[in-house]
Amino acid sequence: SIGGYLNPDYEKIVALQPDIIIMLPNLEMERKLQNLGLRTFTLPDETVEQILHSIKTIGRLLNHEQQAQALVQGIRDTLSWVAEQTTVDDSISTLLIVGREANSLKGLYAAGEDTYLSEILQLCGGTNVFADIDSRYFDVSKEAVIQRNPKAIFELRIIDAHDQSNQVSKLKQDWQQLPILQAVKLNRIYLFTERYFQIPGPRISQIAVAFYQAMHQVNLD
Image (cartoon, rainbow, N blue to C red; front, side, top):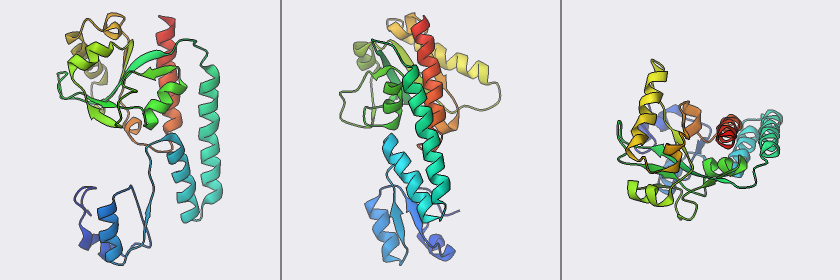
């Protein structure tokens, strides 16, 4: 192991003698690696366009440019298809939750406007209920959620493969602590439990399809 993103083991990284290190923006880490004589390449991945650009860049760096271009085009085609299917005049105010404490609504952590999740939500006919907050990810209180009163809740939560149905049911039940919310009253709480939902990478097209299907169900209610 070479450690984690926040605590890398620089000695082990040097011992591996990598030709290049592809990394997320982290100026301090980048400087340390470069001072050790390592070549780094930083790729931001906060927005859809940044993700697509990163895929093409990685393809070029690894001499697989044609495959990367094809992958990006496939993603764009899927995103365009989703946008074409979205015909709702009024967008649905939606709360995007990416974290909270187990078995409670404490420690709510939301995705803001300038994120790939919020972009995909808009593509599917939703509006981020915290679009005015000038942060990508942030803590929110139950009081703030009540004040915004979203019409739908999209929660990203990685769960164990065992007994998924029961776990999803319990996670949805937690929201009954806020019965005043429109989303709770109308049972518009959607759980997305696959790990890739929280990974800004090539499967953003699958995220878009899943969000679209959920938003389509909201519009049918």
